[in-house]
Length: 511
Image 1 (cartoon, helix red, strand yellow):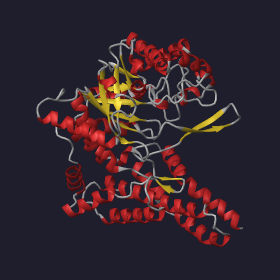
Image 2 (tube, rainbow, N blue to C red; image 1 turned 120 degrees about the vertical axis):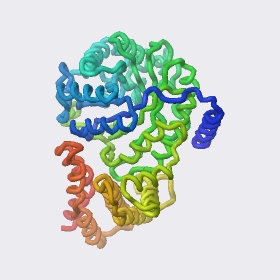
Image 3 (cartoon, helix red, strand yellow; image 1 turned 45 degrees about the vertical axis):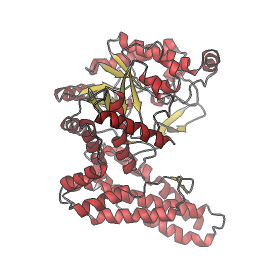
Image 4 (tube, helix red, strand yellow; image 1 turned 45 degrees about the horizontal axis):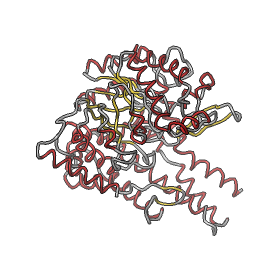
């Protein structure tokens, strides 16, 4: 029903466009959201990416620096991959010379584990065990902290905007103080009053606040009283426009609105990229946003989900936060980036088939037949595995695994005449997925009630075969200029952990 509604609305918008009734002929803001929560890019790679944005006709880059930003007065917030202040200033100046406005994104409500993990900020926590969210009633403390953080970012950025986050506030109304306000005024006012404080702070600092639109759509009274300079970003990754709430409330709010599709998002992870879904999202949402009269378009690219697994030293002391989901680095997604450029710069909706075939011919030197094989391989096998089940499908893991090996064979058989290094990411991703599905099939066998010890020898041999491969070296070689060596080590270790642990556990059990 949701997809049907989205199709109906999109059809109406396209009809308006062809009859000359479009509200907005082009986007003023053409941008990219870069998430550095994991896979912090080397500075030369960042500059090269900025050049890619310029060449693609982009004029805006939203930087979700998170722990890579070097705050002056808060040394516990930057992580081991943080840039120097000189590097940040140099990068912003470099982008400005290219005609790209760099907007800093500082999460200020939810998704602030990397700040609240430190007990210096413990009074701001909505929960003393889940550090993900600010208590919105701690207004004085929050204002003091974020005035300092925003001011710091203003000193290194030249943009008229600051993105304050504001999405996915999962703990909204969680604490006793928050529950009391919810009982009196509702969640909309709990959210809206705190967001109003942040937005007004940004305006006082001479900037315009930008925030994600999901919670404000869910609680429309949160829109009341916000500064008129506020900009909302309507992120939609292929769902019904009313998924978060009544969409018309946002359209009729009077605030400037930007749209945001995505090229890496749930359920993408290291083992699965849903290529066709992202192409379809770009094709459908961008013309839809044009019809709504959105002033900007900023595609998102999430390196992780923003959810974390905690490693505790004691019941109250945290050692580390590990991202629950990691995605293959942005280095492997040039085809989707180019598709976004094409869609945002043209009035007609993206013709996905024509685009992919044309890209494969131009970028990799493929024939028409080879290009079709390439596109068929990308479309195949998008299924997510959860608890031994294949998504919402009736397929079995073995069938999905066999399909993944077919994809791998197809991509290995294709021999690009151009840009071999770029193309090498596809078979590497395919092999990572095939290997993962082999492990999932083994795990499923181990979970069957009829499993017995006689099967262990064969399973251990299968796991050893999965362990002995050159994927780590290939991943390091392809990404050595993109992300830091230590992060490459972390990615390889975390990606292989399940196979390695399973092999060690079963090998010991067999002794």
